[in-house]
Length: 471
Image 1 (cartoon, rainbow, N blue to C red):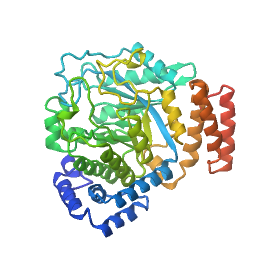
Image 2: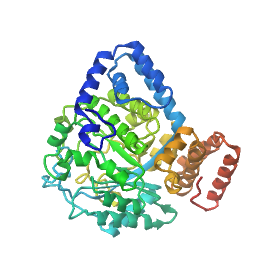
Image 3: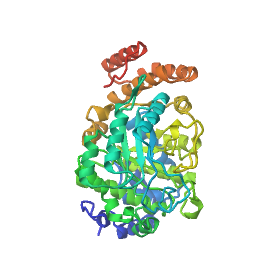
Image 4: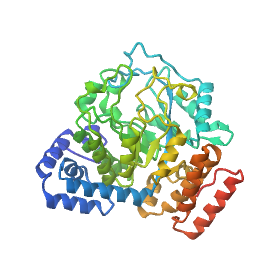
């Protein structure tokens, strides 16, 4: 029986409820009055249930789909404006004791070079990232209690925050590591992390156990209930995600929204972010062996429907996807992207992109400067802002500001201020010219005159060499 408030994985991600939902969606996918009623509800900007959203996903009526796309773009603009938050992953170690069949870091892969960064190597990686202009990282590590214990992760976070190179600083470290204990989540919280991210990979329990045949990750319930332990440990912001292509996408979509409903029901706040990775080629991994791959069109539809179903949740897309795909889904709801990513351990200090230790093939291999200019040329403000986290606007406090629209008076000026820092310290002359024109134009879109004046003042001070202003 489906119980959103239950703390048991198989009750809040209930298999029978998902099957019933998919059957209901198939039975009603051509029901125009119902489809229009669901879209009307979505226009209230309060989201949709997993069942309502699943009906839209099953629908093949082009007119309805186009309406959903237009609504997704409208919701994106209403809550996030034209800002796109920038980040980069930092791989600390590819030692792993799990047997995940879709990941090249699995324990049985005997020919991949294993590597774990020392604190000095982390320092060099972080300096390389700072020299690009990054301010926000997501650290990644395989699950290995001997090589990657929580103490190593905590020491690495401390190292990252301590490095100030020229005008560079990493102001927010998000963490993507294996499911752990409440006690360890408390330690991560005390270390000053931003969002705790953990991909479910698949919500289909039988598939999950088959795809994770060995290692601690085999335990479906322990993995699926991790976000509850993280929130119990004091972490306000958690990030969900499935790896599309492992299981049937409609099943995953329903499970993902049920997980969001569960977090809202139990903790009063849903996920801070949802990521939408797709299975990609990597060392000894051929994505064609997974027969649930999805087309770019289906992927775009998923992104649009996630946006209208959970309007206040940030959506993340990585460099797994091509420039073309990223361009499409940014319009439909994505609010965070990575740039100039290296998915290998120690990759940022290598002159030539290493491929032997990459977790997955990177489709978008442009520099951060190129990505920033591309975003601006498409009307988006690249934001390096970390102010909400640093001002304590996390969890339910962030959501209440977001729902009221007040966050626009913080986020829009903060995006312009941090973009100005990037332009002054890291941009090529061509990118700087495009950026200066964008800042002048976008200053006019700050709602409050006083905030606009202060923003202009901060921008002037950044030109004089000062840094790190925020609202």
